Image (cartoon, rainbow, N blue to C red; front, side, top):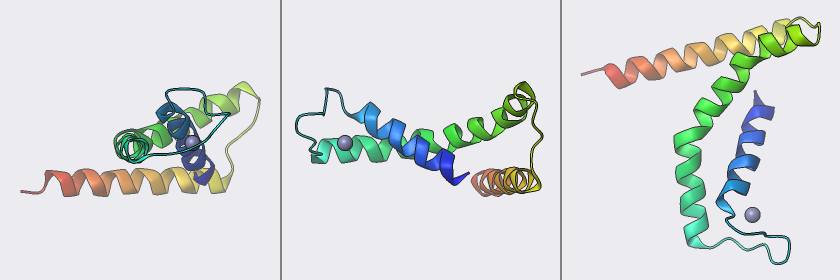
Length: 90
Ligand SMILES: [Zn+2]
């Protein structure tokens, strides 16, 4: 799951560069605010969607999920349930 988090950070970082950054690579306050907001809004869903795709991707390549992968998927589901329960409390 850590790999999906790092991948999400990288993609969202690049999304926040609205112009080519291969010359000078600077980040101003606007960049960091946009990056922060994008991570808050999209990273959890991105990671969850990646994890959900694992079974079909594994099947495509003739592989089975490992015990570690299944444990991480369970952990993610439990975390999502706790967050959902906390959000719905009065
Ligand atoms: Zn950058």
